[in-house]
Amino acid sequence: MARCPGQDTQFWKYDAIYDVKCPQCGGDVEFYKDEVTHRCKNCGATVLNEKMDLACLKWCPYAEQCVGPERYKAVKQEKELEEKRNEDFRKLLELIPERELEVRKTFKELFYKNKDLTKLFDTNELFYIKEKNEELFEKCIGYYKKFMEQR
Image 1 (cartoon, rainbow, N blue to C red):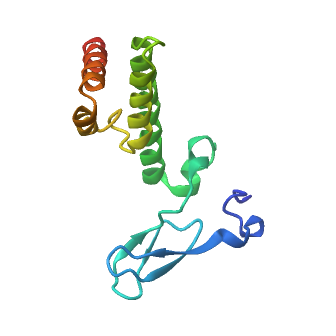
Image 2 (image 1 turned 30 degrees about the vertical axis):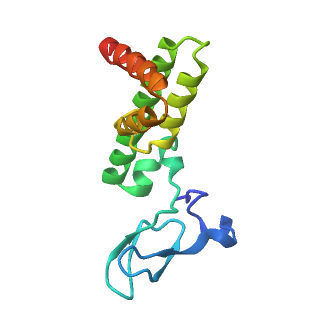
């Protein structure tokens, strides 16, 4: 069976092996780029390979065979959440007139700052804006409420 070019070590570059800090003890845990987890030799904690890039799982026809059905299902669900989040963000921006540059900019910053795929942005961040610029806050809340009503 042919190997995935991304997983075939003959195509790897110098940066395919690297250290990740253990979140428990701070020790170095060595990873190959295709490894998901390892046990820390210092404290025994299971460490997730935070640098692992499995973007290919989103498009590769052999993805499920490569990583197994559970991991593939998780990646597929993540992709669906990401697509829904992006679509919702597009709909939110459609409600905001082009002339409202500051509001649009604020929502874009909040959207890209947030890494939680289950929500557009951290709504608590809006309240930090209120402390600095109440008028901007009121505009943002108004457009966000309108968006939520149309959802």
